[in-house]
Amino acid sequence: MSTSLTPPLAPPRPRLLRLPDFRRLWIGDTVSQAGTAVTVLALPLVAIGPLHASPFEAGLLVMCEYLGFLLLGLPAGAWVDRMRRRRVMIAGDLGRAVLLATLPLAAWLHVLTLGQVYAVAFGLSVCTAFFDIAYQSHLPELVDEERLVEANVALEASRTVTAAGGPGAGGALVAALTAPVALAVDAVSFLASALLLSRIRRPDPRPEPRPGVRLRDEIAEGLRFVFRDRLLRALTLTAAISNLCGTLGTSMLLVLLAGELGLSPFLCGLVFTAEALGGFLGSLLTTRIAARLGQGRAMCASVLVSGVLWLLALPFFQADWRYAVACVLQGLGWTAFMTFKIGSVSLRQRRTPAPLLGRVTATFRFVVWGCMPLGALAGGLLGRYAGVRTALWAGALGELLAVVPLLLSARGRQEG
Image (cartoon, rainbow, N blue to C red; front, side, top):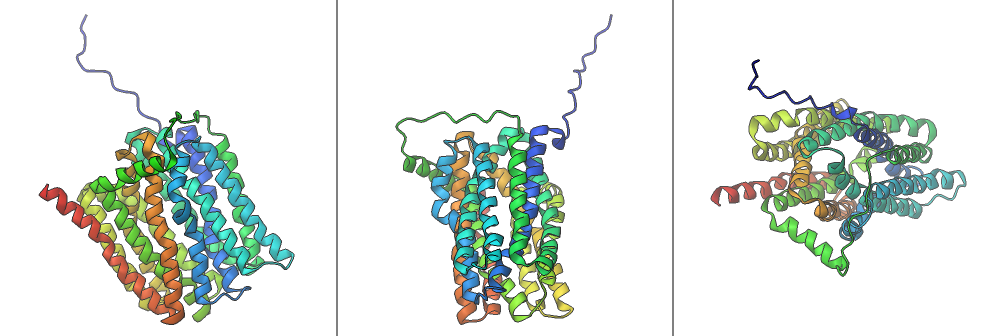
């Protein structure tokens, strides 16, 4: 009798989307993102259209959409690390559904005001702050560490696919039903997402209590972990500069398109569709680009090339054939940027111990998303006093500086 020295082959791993719990998370997130893509266009058009918001007031709206991350981002991470993360996600979905439903109701009763739109935008940002921190902390519990990049690519790809059709569909809905009614679509999508998340079977245990540990000490622990790690610090600062400068310009984009150029809601939505299609293409290329260039070089190139493309797009935002060129360049910018966006999330999840993941994610979101209301406020002020296009140019030029922390980190590693 002969025996073989060749070890038996390991059974093939099932495809990621065949894992029931990940599939429910993926579908729920996809449904929610599809509705959110409608809101990206519809909420500003509520302010700019029937409520006649000025450029500064439109900038304030964008500020409110991200203000929750600045005010509550850090404590939200510590709270999430103390709670069942899936329950936090479900509560976040239900809260966003209720908030959005108030807008078409107020419009139907003819009592809709800009103040209510601001309040809803702020409430959405608070719910999203908790949801996103819990979501990124819960994902490593549903998939193996070796599949985190694959899982993030799948989630990001589906987000960009739904976002591709969302703004165009949003423009059509706004034109047919008015902007407030179009927001009801997003409210329904959050309800569907909450239902799917509630059907995940993987246990969602309550984290081990840490008696005697104060909330501020837990927050400080997350801050120290991020800013003492050279790579995490560079990733955070790069994303913060990109978001600050990007929001400075994009807070005025719809003011330019719908206000100054007088484009229809459908045409306004095309630039977001182009961005989403570009992001989808970039998500498919992320793994290949990182393998070809190496992850560090790929991420640096991603930030630099995307900044150049967004800068080149600005002169083409005109009410004629040049608008199509602007949309293409804007979309290609997102194709380039996805390598950094997906890579940074996966690196952060891999380098962070599970008990700290909520606080590290919260620290990242606090710094990165907390810059966005500041950028929106700056964009509104520039739009009011220096002109809408000046704000767009300032934001695009600032985006080119985002690569600096990554380059300094790479140089420091070489010298070390």
